[in-house]
Image (cartoon, rainbow, N blue to C red; front, side):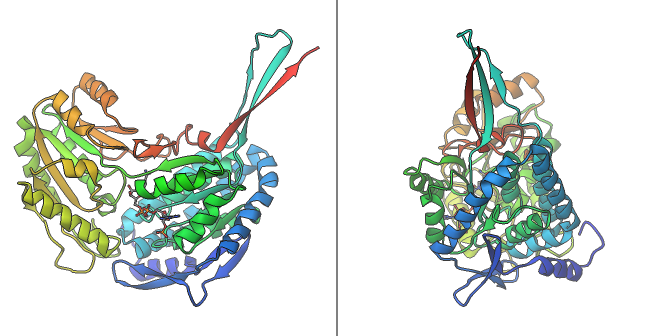
Length: 490
Ligand code: NAP
C-alpha cells in the first residue's frame, strides 16, 4: 500500500463508484436479468453485472452522440478545456476509489492501480491544456488573388473500443483527446473491466459534459461492435486491443469509410549490449516486463543479451525476479497479481513448455503459483527458440532471454516480427543508441528504460501493431480533419 488507507476503506470507496449500468444518451440503463457477469480475478467471485444492450439501444447512444456533436464542437476550445480540467479534478479527488475499482476488476496491485489512475488522468490534463491551441494555418497561393485558410475541425462522433489491461488509461487516452478536439464519444469498454470506464463517465457528467456527448455501451461484442462499426453517423473508430480483432473491426468499418486508429498487439524486443550499465538494464527489464503482471502491449516479450554480459545479466535478473511477491491486489508488498483469466494462465504455461522443449532452461518460476487460481510464478528462461516470441505475445510474467553476438545480428532478430509496437535497448554508447534505435521497426523505442508510457510521448505502432498515435501533440491529429477555405480577394 502506498498510503495508510486500509483495504476495507479502499474497497468501500470502489463500491461507491461501482455502477451496474450502461450510460445511453444521458440515461443510466440498469443491468437486467440477462446481464453480463464481471469477475474479481483475484477472488474468482462475481463483482457485479453490466447490461447486455440491444443493437437499438446502441443506436440510441450513437444518435445522441450525433445530436450532441454540433453543440460540443461549436464551443470554444477554452470551454472544452475547462470541462477537461474539471474532469481531471474529479478524477484526482476520486483516485483512491478508482484505483481500488481497477484492482477489484483487473487484479493489478493497488499501488500500481493508483499509478494507472494518475497516468490516465495525465491524458485528461494534457488535452485540457491543448484545447485552446488547435490553430489552423493560412496558406500562400500561386494565384495572386487567392488566400487559403486551413481549419482543423473535429472528425465527428467517435466510437472507442478498449481492452481490459488498463481499465482507465486506455479510455482517457482516447476520450480526452476526442473531447479536446470537439468530438463526442460512444465507448465500449472491455467486458472484463467495465466498471472503471463507467465510473469515469459518471465523473465526466458531473464535470459538466452535455447529455449524449459521452455514452458507455456494454454487452455482446458482435451486437455492440456491429452497431458502432455499421453506423454512418460514427465518423471514426479508435480501437485498442488484439491485432486479430482490429483487422475484423477495420473490415467492418470499410463500407462507411471511417477514420481509424488501431492500437494493437506487440511482441517487443529488449536488447542489452555489452556496454550497458548492468543494474540499469536489469531494473529496466523487470520494470517493463512485470507491469500489470506482464499483461501490457509494450511489455518486453523477448530479451536479447550480448554474450559478454549474458551470465551476469541472467544472475541478477533471476535474483530480482525470484524476489517478486505474487498475491492479491490489496496485500502489502505485492508486485504481481492474478492473470485476467484461465486462458491467460494456460497461454503462459504453453509458452514455458514450448520454450523448454526448444532447449530453454528455467532459471526461476516456470509453473502456476502455489496460491492456485490465476496466479503464475514470475519466470525467467534462458535459451530456446526466439521465433515463438516474435510471433506471439505471452501476456504474462515470463521473460525469455536469448544471447547474441553482433549489432547486425540482433537487429535482424529484433525486426523478425510482424508486430512493431515497442522496442527497448540498453547501451551507454550514444551513437549506438541512435543507430540501433533508428533501425528498430517499432513505433515507440525506449533507451535505457523499460517504461515509456507518458502523456507527452506519441504512442502507437507500425506493421501489424497498427497505426495512429495517442497522447502527445500528435495524438490530437487522429481526431481532427482539415477543411480548406479559399478566398478570392478583390
Ligand atoms: P481484444 O480481445 O482484442 O478485445 C479488445 C476490445 O475489443 C474489448 O472491448 C472486446 O470486447 C472488444 N471486441 C472483441 N471482439 C470484438 C468484436 N468482434 N466486435 C467488437 N468488439 C470486440 O483484446 P484484449 O484481450 O481485451 O486486450 C489485449 C490485447 O490488447 C493485446 O493484444 C494487447 O497487446 C492489446 N493492447 C494494445 C495496446 C496498444 O496501445 N497498442 C494497449 C493495450 C492492449 P469484450 O471485452 O466484450 O470481449
